[in-house]
Picture (cartoon, rainbow, N blue to C red):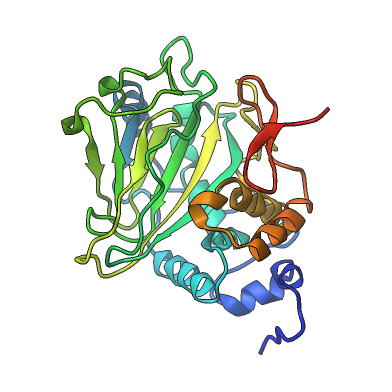
Length: 319
């Protein structure tokens, strides 16, 4: 039995044994390691179709994209973290949450090139049922950088993995396909929908994935009284390796970060999205302390570089 008595939040968060006590079905490789995972063999044709869909509509969907064998364990882990009153993005302390994205390596290599990188941007979503929960408000993941190459291919993208079914009643993703967005790709700081019939709902089954260009206008829906379970999903961002870093530190997509690196990246997300997550002052201070464990998140938007301060505001990084 793990004894939490007398320990600070920082001591608990940095203790591998605490997280293993909370979810003994999962693993934490504390010092990091190369990933050794059997990857599904995405065909080159599927990769090129997904790439074409990204170019034409800004997004793609692939059913049964990740191994479903351990999805129940991942869902249980998120629920345990939530029930212990930690932000659910702490799920990324566990190897298995990183390995889900490693499974997609062959697909991402076709879309972004074989030297693609993982950005230090990730999040776990747990939308409460019954109308109590909702995903993020309408937004673009990135709006102050050019996100298309001259050939129309994406520079950066988000991958969203559905760990549970996501329906309109549980808060699925909604998207404005780029062909209906007059502001894509050259006026991304402008938001809005001119014809609501252009909005597309993207329900998913557990194990399905969505991918979209980071400039695509999208949001998570609100659950309804007809939704009987939490909608749980994980997301991470990736970029081409032959483009300048949109954020640092860039991560090798086929390696497991150390526990300190994971905690620093998780903390950066808590600070960055604290308005959406409703971060308490205690957790905000914890995030500040955890982010200092490793290299600080830097966003290289136009006019930058920028960092996120304790209040979640994007401010110029001092030289």
